[in-house]
Image (cartoon, rainbow, N blue to C red; front, side):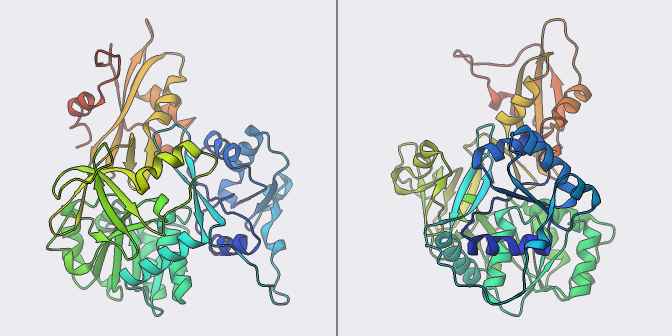
Length: 458
């Protein structure tokens, strides 16, 4: 496992692990020790690599998981890390001799990528050499990647979008990769100027942050030729703002998910104006279908579940045969997303079937957040859901029912949740009520709650 912010060592690890016949499992650096401990228990790592900032969290997670046997390696360790038992990753690096060729079977797992679904614990998506290389070929062709590109990587490399949508394919074709640790606009602007960057990817939330920065100057982007967005839906008004601010930059929209390694559809530059809001057509090597609840194809313009077939597709979920069967039922990879295909063949994403919330590109399980809040001794019931947010696209709302005689407020609930889940999973808005709306079978009516609180994030 590796828990680190962006750095060149992180960029080397996927290839080093593959050569060693090992599997790399990147971890979100915002996760708490409790969350990381669950992942440790899930994939049973033999080695844990971390940077200085995450060393304390990683150590606590290993202790919680009872895994004192795991080899601990630190990227550029300081004295504190060394005293805590972390070895030096650099000591494992050698420049002597020529590495012997290693046979890696096409369908051998090389990556476990953690993804949040409707369950409280993320699943581990199993990516293989085959799925990654097919995806690299598709994204290079459709995204018009070139050897002369200078690509800036400031989005987290522990996500497959940055690692396999951009960094890996760039290495594959021999392009130049610029890795920066921080995605703060000031650092992004500095790197663009310093390294003469020609290509960048950012989530819609990050684009909003970049365009809204008081340091934003279109002249900084004079050398940028290609820009990409994805990981969540781009508001049409933000897309227009981006096009107006940087009219010379060609834009691509990527839609996909970790289970697809990750690319599924592309909206190319020539379609950005004519089809705003569309996720585009299936990428090279990808078939798409819109299926109903019986897994039968629906007509164009009719809502259904977005499904794909492709050599990009993962093997499924590690150690979870039931979830894997559900993912690939009827011979298609089921995304859990609702959308429709227009008569032009272009995809339009509408909503999610899965009970997840997308916070600026980070998927959050409502079940996980609900379980964290329910652990509070004064909470009787809770419903967590997402509402529209002008910056993060969605904001988390928690509606809480206190136990008889107990007193709760937003600050108390947020403070308690922050101890158990990552900061971006903490509800932005908390409302205390006497009872939750339910149907005849006792199921909480989240649709009603979403409508009732739809304006709180605006």
